[in-house]
Length: 299
Image (cartoon, rainbow, N blue to C red; front, side):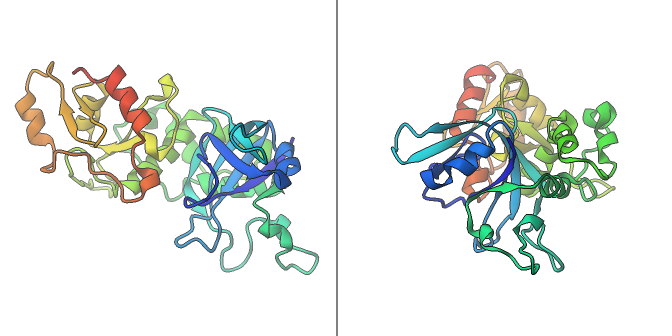
């Protein structure tokens, strides 16, 4: 087992769903197998416009032949392990390359940087994860949100000199995952409530909006932006209790069990539809919307 880097781009020709699977050709099989049972970091190439750099981390559950393509294989991601970085990490900054293992004896980037699947040293893994989940510039929740009282404040302290294996403990920490999920969802929605359309900032400069899971974590919902919606406190409460739901075209539905549908209707933005992100990969996935409609919405 060992750490690795999987290179991925949203317009890839490969059948990738980073939170679930990564498709690769046979030439990378040995390298991918080296990561089986361990953690990898996803990297978006520098040549991609507005690249996110190292943008996520996940654990490889197993490597299997792709049943649909004879010369391809799949890295299956262990459910519940994928995590988008709250702070995407650039491939390089003004002074150095983050992935130090790519440098040759002369301090130049070697040909290994061209490999779509490659090994990653424990030191480089720890460095990338530290930068990706660092809390120094977090979009904090409101002071009255439960997460702060349940330990979220503790993980906002800087992480120092942790080993790669100690960093893995951070990746499975619920407070860390919630914080990163919130940052990514609020960023994708411009800190605006997707139901009401309101963007309110409190006196401390914090957004008065929350990150709601469409399919809850306790029901195997992943911590990915496409399973999240930015909602005001009231809208979040209504969504979680099934008083509002979503159709497949993101139209906002009001439960017939609501005792005051007119008031709910007045809260909904004038389009009557969820205000979704422009980036397609950030938009709510149909499978999660369907799950909420079938299991939460009180039609």
